[in-house]
Length: 499
Image 1 (cartoon, helix red, strand yellow):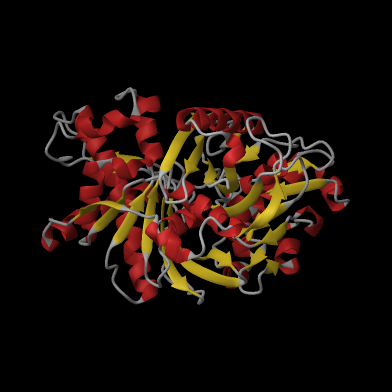
Image 2: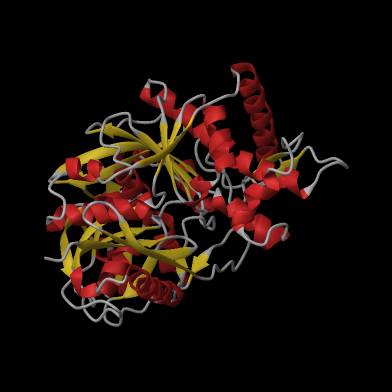
């Protein structure tokens, strides 16, 4: 019987393929990066041809590294950058526009107009989200208005909208199904997370034709089977699906109410399991669906920081002070502290709890003594400060202090960052043996659907802890650091104005 699982983690800067054994061991892993496109300031786009090629290459590389035949794949789990928006032609499968990425801010003015018209309370009540260009709804509207004839074609049912998961299932199944899962649907501003369905009233406000939208399914079931996929046999079940942050929550086995994880990728995302209750946020977070299994919906509180690993990429690509992202820790360790340097990485506005699309990055406290090492250390600390803001808001919404935090994602391998994060939170941080928990979560969901795992107890057994970071910073010093950070954030917000 085939026993290995394949996870496809389609992220913001690259696509990763992970092969997982039935006891949770990673057999092979590979990542292929692809180009980012910035047509105007604040605009971020992806070419779907580039994404498709990166997935094909990652699959080939992962199987080559694992040395196992693709014919023994029991099922495929998919996880994805979430709010990134795609609209394609149902007949040809060709996109009508480049994908608009979750980081894109072009619809900020439209979100402001919807707020000014008094609609934000309705959106928050039904979707758990705030009106922000981060989410998919206004991106859909923008594409339909920008591409000649697209709106009429959408209303006739000739076009299909999806987040990247929908497009991937379409592509991998040879166009057999147009589906999404509940977690990705919950990020669109069009989905009622309480009723569990697309909402006609919200769709009308956003001018999104219902004929454009995919069928919403659970996170663990067989949606379709592979057809004409390079490197894979036909007939492999596509059996698990969740947005990247929800997949990471599942991959971290955060199955109990109050369990929380933070994923440090291009951005950083903090989620806390709130069980079957959708806890409304009054402190700048969003309420979202964690997963849907067996007809039961589990919810989460979420805080999103738009720039995390992307700040390190900026040091590499924008400033050229490091040659690879891996060098940032050794550079930062050349100094004992960041000195007076404070880096607010608002390179794409500020997410939770501020939701300020006009905020811009800020580096403060530079003197004649400032070196590249100070900037590197301040960049890492800026990532951790953002998460401290999210944790503070989450503790207020949940009504309980955070006992410990589980971490994953590429930047979680950075020892300096993780220790500083524990110090700022005053709570221990658990890092698993594999920080690829986003991909693992997708594989676990697929494994449940095809019988590789019998239940979440089997998933928990497959999860292994590698290290715990204990906090060492005294509370007065922690409070002083956080006060400096908040002053810097206020400057980053006050010095930016709407375009």
